[in-house]
Image (cartoon, rainbow, N blue to C red; front, top):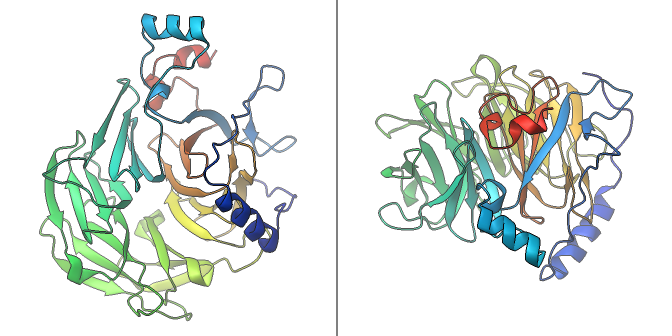
Length: 376
């Protein structure tokens, strides 16, 4: 991939003023989305003349975007001009995907929404006992589709099967200062739990837990700015050769460790240029080992190779909603087929991008109704 020549549009001061203004207007509804038209063709990244790597595919705003449209609903929409009704997202936070089944935490509604795209159904996890959620933040899935939820109120990991049946609870309030995120090792034997700590806490660390027993194995990291230290860590992903990539948000960098928590290297620093960070938040990895980092300050995600070299970025900060336009980007995930899922809290949506070489009807998400028509 080639590095785009353009720079980020907004500096950190302008971005802060913009966010402040938007927060004061938080009672207003988002503007209607701008979508690609037949005249402009598909939206690709990077833009021409660079070789396209990803194409914008679709956006999910709620259950209506994945549910099959009944004849009655279509007729009502035609006669009244109303859109197809459904449950909209409230405050989407983090995201995980298993074979076309999208899990999305909603910290205000205190549930995990499930969009089973291939089967056209929507349901919620954690709304009732057993396994009722207090404030779900980070989530992840294992290779069997089981869901692991970091509940910041319970200060524990709540575990469910892929259909939402509560299985067990891992950890307790004594384990964490501020539980923020959970990542399942691809091998399936370990959980990596991110404790973001706090202003008055030194417990800015990653806790490593045995999946089978639920026992704490070891910790790594402490509050500080030296290599291997953390200042408000936010998220972790497992990349190439089992390396652990941790978003060290307060130090404006991504730190890399081996599977046993030994520091290897870091990349990134504070700034407004490509490859730097303003407000790094969530992180993901693809099967090739590339690393995807959400930056709330820039309103985008940057893609790095396994060694931390910048490849490209996708998205921009914008006042009006539209594909790859963001105000408060949050979660990110890359599925088995290389599709990227990007969550924005302000516009309450999930943007989906697919690799340019992948047809619309290919992969798990390609099994959705209408995908074959979209690929023609």
